[in-house]
Length: 89
Figure 1 (cartoon, rainbow, N blue to C red):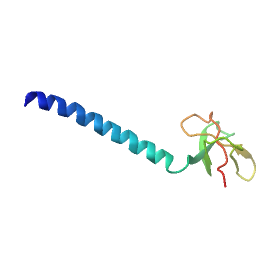
Figure 2: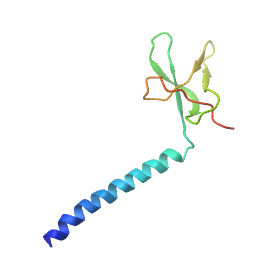
Figure 3: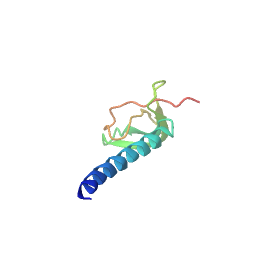
Protein backbone atom coordinates (compact mmCIF):
# COMPACT_ATOMS: atom_id res chain seq x y z
CA UNK A 1 0.00 0.00 0.00
CA UNK A 2 2.86 2.37 0.83
CA UNK A 3 4.45 1.78 -2.61
CA UNK A 4 1.12 2.51 -4.30
CA UNK A 5 0.86 5.89 -2.54
CA UNK A 6 4.40 6.80 -3.55
CA UNK A 7 3.47 6.17 -7.20
CA UNK A 8 0.06 7.88 -7.21
CA UNK A 9 1.18 11.27 -5.89
CA UNK A 10 3.90 11.90 -8.52
CA UNK A 11 1.60 10.64 -11.28
CA UNK A 12 -1.18 12.99 -10.12
CA UNK A 13 1.21 15.94 -10.04
CA UNK A 14 2.43 15.17 -13.56
CA UNK A 15 -1.15 14.87 -14.86
CA UNK A 16 -2.18 18.16 -13.23
CA UNK A 17 0.86 19.91 -14.71
CA UNK A 18 0.20 18.51 -18.18
CA UNK A 19 -3.45 19.54 -17.97
CA UNK A 20 -2.54 23.07 -16.91
CA UNK A 21 0.00 23.38 -19.74
CA UNK A 22 -2.57 22.20 -22.28
CA UNK A 23 -5.21 24.60 -20.96
CA UNK A 24 -2.75 27.50 -21.14
CA UNK A 25 -1.77 26.62 -24.71
CA UNK A 26 -5.41 26.40 -25.82
CA UNK A 27 -6.20 29.75 -24.19
CA UNK A 28 -3.25 31.44 -25.91
CA UNK A 29 -4.19 30.08 -29.33
CA UNK A 30 -7.93 30.69 -29.06
CA UNK A 31 -7.67 34.42 -29.83
CA UNK A 32 -5.46 33.98 -32.94
CA UNK A 33 -2.60 35.76 -31.20
CA UNK A 34 -4.55 39.00 -30.67
CA UNK A 35 -3.24 41.19 -27.88
CA UNK A 36 -3.19 44.80 -26.78
CA UNK A 37 -0.42 46.87 -28.30
CA UNK A 38 1.92 49.00 -26.21
CA UNK A 39 3.74 52.17 -27.26
CA UNK A 40 6.59 54.29 -25.91
CA UNK A 41 5.27 57.48 -24.32
CA UNK A 42 7.58 60.18 -25.73
CA UNK A 43 7.18 62.45 -22.70
CA UNK A 44 8.07 59.84 -20.06
CA UNK A 45 9.78 57.05 -22.02
CA UNK A 46 7.39 54.54 -20.40
CA UNK A 47 5.82 51.61 -22.23
CA UNK A 48 2.04 52.26 -22.12
CA UNK A 49 -0.99 50.30 -23.34
CA UNK A 50 -2.85 51.55 -26.43
CA UNK A 51 -6.47 50.83 -27.41
CA UNK A 52 -5.29 49.01 -30.58
CA UNK A 53 -5.39 45.22 -30.88
CA UNK A 54 -2.47 43.62 -32.72
CA UNK A 55 -0.99 40.18 -33.40
CA UNK A 56 2.45 38.59 -33.25
CA UNK A 57 1.90 37.01 -36.69
CA UNK A 58 4.23 38.87 -39.12
CA UNK A 59 2.68 41.30 -41.57
CA UNK A 60 2.25 45.09 -41.67
CA UNK A 61 3.49 46.79 -38.51
CA UNK A 62 0.75 47.67 -36.03
CA UNK A 63 0.48 51.39 -35.24
CA UNK A 64 -1.75 53.71 -33.23
CA UNK A 65 -2.49 57.38 -33.93
CA UNK A 66 -3.18 59.33 -30.72
CA UNK A 67 -4.18 62.42 -32.69
CA UNK A 68 -0.75 64.02 -32.71
CA UNK A 69 1.69 61.12 -33.15
CA UNK A 70 1.64 57.75 -34.90
CA UNK A 71 3.16 55.18 -32.52
CA UNK A 72 4.61 51.77 -33.44
CA UNK A 73 3.11 49.14 -31.15
CA UNK A 74 4.94 46.44 -29.21
CA UNK A 75 4.26 43.39 -27.01
CA UNK A 76 3.62 43.86 -23.30
CA UNK A 77 6.30 42.57 -20.96
CA UNK A 78 9.07 43.32 -23.45
CA UNK A 79 9.54 46.95 -22.40
CA UNK A 80 8.35 47.94 -25.88
CA UNK A 81 11.07 46.07 -27.79
CA UNK A 82 9.15 43.32 -29.68
CA UNK A 83 7.07 44.67 -32.59
CA UNK A 84 3.46 43.70 -33.21
CA UNK A 85 1.61 43.49 -36.51
CA UNK A 86 -1.82 44.39 -37.87
CA UNK A 87 -4.25 41.47 -37.66
CA UNK A 88 -5.45 39.98 -40.96
CA UNK A 89 -8.90 41.22 -41.88
